[in-house]
Image 1 (cartoon, rainbow, N blue to C red):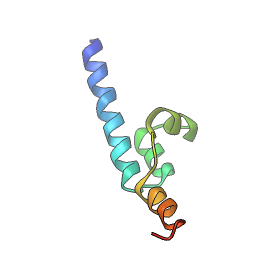
Image 2 (tube, rainbow, N blue to C red; image 1 turned 135 degrees about the vertical axis):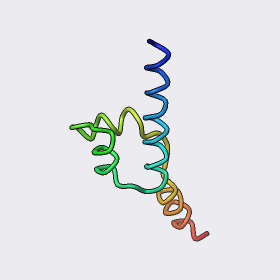
Image 3 (cartoon, rainbow, N blue to C red; image 1 turned 90 degrees about the vertical axis):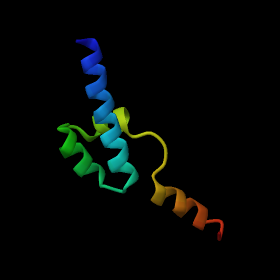
Image 4 (cartoon, one colour; image 1 turned 90 degrees about the horizontal axis):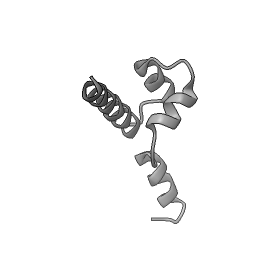
Length: 63
């Protein structure tokens, strides 16, 4: 049973990561994953910067 839970959680994590990296709004990711509180979604699944955030940071340096 534990391995089934691990696989399911890994799939949820992958889905959240892919949605986030493709700039799907946090509120929509939260709804897809079924979380009531956005903080749960953010603290559990979102790690690192999104492509748009990285590009905005690079643009500040004029590149």
